[in-house]
Structure formats: C-alpha cells, structure tokens
Length: 131
Image 1: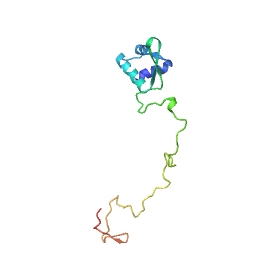
Image 2: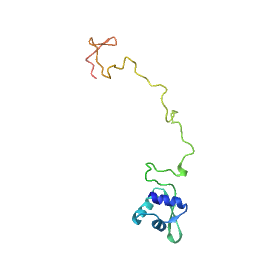
Image 3: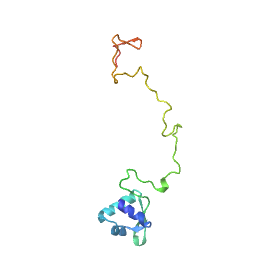
Image 4: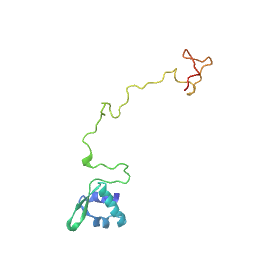
C-alpha cells in the first residue's frame, strides 16, 4: 500500500488504476486490494475519468510503519487546547506532593516491626483490629 501511496504522491496528478498496475512494483491482485483499501480509508481519492476510467489521486500520505494514520492538512486544527474543562493544564503537575515523614518510613527497608511493649507513637498497640 505504501508503494501505491508514494507513487501517487510523486505524480501529483490523477492516475488510472491501469497505469498504477503497470508502473508500481507488485502483483496486480495485491495492487488492486491496496488501491481499494487506500480509497476506503481516505488516503486516496477516486475521481471519474474519461471512458469510465477510475482515476486515483493522493489525499494524504500512507506509511506502513505509522501506528497512527498521518492526518491530512485539512484535519489538523489551527491550535491545540492547553487546558481541560476544569481549567487544569493537560499536563499539569500538582504544586506539592506530600512526602512521608521520617517517623512513617521504616528504616529497615519497608518492614515494620512493632515495639516489644506494644506502644506505637505513645498509644497502646491493639492486636484486635482486623486489617
């Protein structure tokens, strides 16, 4: 499909399906499928020609390795919104992120061991609380 698209881009003018079949490298049956798919997906426009010819002209480039289709010049907005509906920027970062206090982070790599006397932070440790 990319070869058909590139050929039409380089021509810059409408070309018949027969001309494309004769000039683009590939099996005719696959070229026909490629032309049909390019037309159906909007990469190529088909216009009527003399004697019922079906002429093709590039509408926008098609590339095999594009994970997202290349937008046409007509579909690209003049400006990109920078704020969402609630006024926050699209890529906003909170002003501050709470950091844990030194007392809440265990010094032994994340394993918390209760004190021997069962008193944590001045309060008695209650083993009956279901967590």
